[in-house]
Image 1 (cartoon, one colour):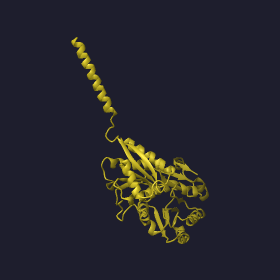
Image 2 (cartoon, rainbow, N blue to C red):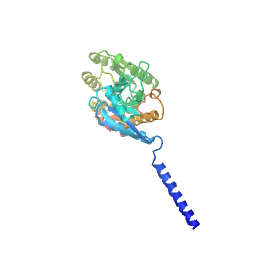
Image 3 (cartoon, rainbow, N blue to C red):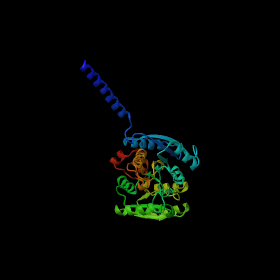
Image 4 (spheres, one colour):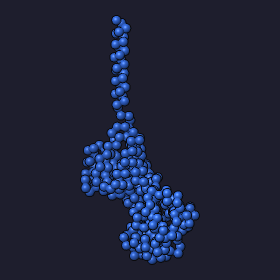
Length: 324
């Protein structure tokens, strides 16, 4: 009878061991617990959906189960107090801003919760940086601005013969990026010629003065130049003078710019998620510099190329994400 008793004890012990192992497996690993994230969107657009997909993927890869609760600025909430109450109520560990308006709103709200932005253009010009070039708040993120070097490299890919780049800009708006572009162009042995304007009325004259000195025209996100009237003149000027125009985005290429290099929205969201995972693991947002897109997509307007007499190399056409 004794062997039977020992067998019974062994079976009971084995059952307990298996039960404990199963229970241990059922427990979430460190970092795999539910992670509430409040998402504030400037508005609802498809690009934000792509960014959120990348954001969730990045957190999941690092063992975080992001539980997203989405709100739209000025539709679901209007005040900083509402935002703070919602973040507290859901126990948010991070607040994610999608778009420039949402990021500014969150920065001004001075929340106790760390904040990360995504899908933001020009953090400096958008008012997210202080005079020292820092966020000045518990915030970091991933912006949409493709580095100038990437844009100029793409110019040489699309128009291998380009030697001199021109830009029209308002110093009060975009001096910093123009200074950066001049430095990048010099390092690439490219000529760089700029003309300043103070109002949209100055744009035609500035372009005329540029014309003999350049063989490509670069657009920057300058509100003085990007008015409806000024843009119409810029496009007409580029066509009339057979100048390759470097646009800011796919939208500008549809309008007639020769090409643009833009961010992969899903990967921008992925970059924001990677920054968020670092915050969740204990790093401070103010110690994490915001990042630029690491993956860019080329958009080409082949109709424009034909009109201005540019033959884009076949391998560059094949590499484009979108062509018109």
